[in-house]
Length: 271
Image 1 (cartoon, rainbow, N blue to C red):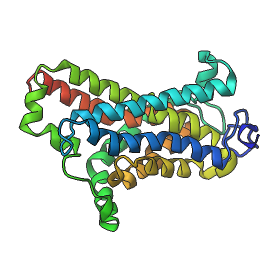
Image 2 (image 1 turned 180 degrees about the vertical axis):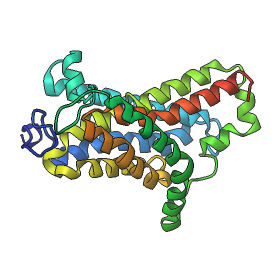
Image 3 (image 1 turned 90 degrees about the horizontal axis):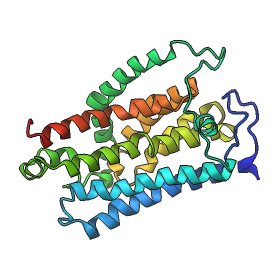
C-alpha cells in the first residue's frame, strides 16, 4: 500500500520510516479532530451542569478526546510494527536525542530549547491573541461564544471558590495537560504524523503539519490561526530540523506548566 511504502530520499531523514499517503494523513487528522469537535460542541452542552458556562466540565470532556489521541497513536504504531518496545517507539515517534540533519551531530543541541521556550512564551503573551483577533475579524462566525474562555472562567469568583482546596480539579487539569501537550496532540502531530509526511509534502511537511494542527482545532475555531502559526514555527519546524518531537512537546508544554502553577496557587488559596 502507498501509505506503508518506505519514503523516497526526500532530504527529511525519514527514509527508513513508513510514509503516509495524503488520504491516510487526512484520515488520521480527522480521527483526532472529529471526536474533539463532537465532544466540544455536542457532548459538553448535553452534560455540563451549566451549558452556557461549562468551565471544568468542558475541560474534563475534552480530556477524553486527548486521551483518545494517545490511544490512536498506540494503535497505529502497533499496527505498523507489531511491537511497542521502547527502542522502536523512540525511533518511530522521534522521541530521541536531537541531531543536526546534515552532520548527525548530537552534542549541546538541547540548549536550543532555551530560545525556543522564550519565543513560545512571547508568542503566547504578545502574538497569539492578536492573530486570533485578526482571524475572527475575517471570519466573525468563528468567534468564541460567551462562557468558553477558560481564563475568564478561572478569574470568576465562583470558579475561585470552587478551586480552593479542590485537588481533584488540579488532578483533572494536570491529566488534561499531559495528554494535551505530551501524550496527545504533540505525540500525534509531531511524533506520528510529521515523520510520515515527507513523501507527500517534501521539505514543506512542517508547514502542512502546522496547518493541519490549526485546522484540527474545530473545538475552538477562534484560535485556529494562532494554533497553526505556533504549530508551524514553534512545534513542527524545530521538531523536523532536529528530528526530535521533544522540541515540539517542550515548547507546547510551557503554557501547561504555567497554568498548572496558577491553578495550584488557586487550590492553595494563594491567588
